Length: 95
Ligand SMILES: [Zn+2]
Image (cartoon, rainbow, N blue to C red; front, side, top):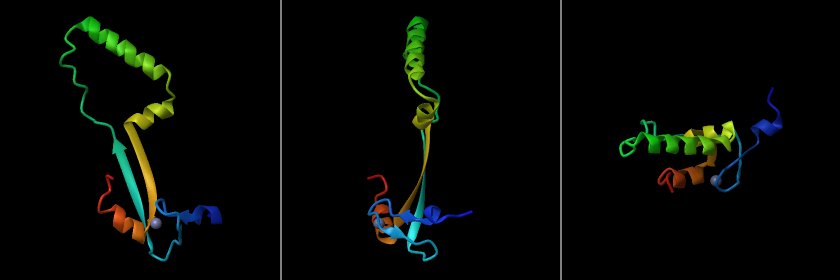
């Protein structure tokens, strides 16, 4: 277990090599979840129109892989940032 490849880390922002065990970098975990509230159906009172909309959605989804569908609702990223980049990033993470 554990080859050199697995422990070779680069900062996601500046590309600097990071060395586990030296405490000079940060692991940033980002979890992004699509709006979990139920779809707003107000305004779709006409059942025929609603059925059409749903058909449209199903057609769109047919062209997508399961992976693409998953990515639309949920994504989890792990970033490695060197100390310098982390201090800049954490002040404005949504940039
Ligand atoms: Zn960096």
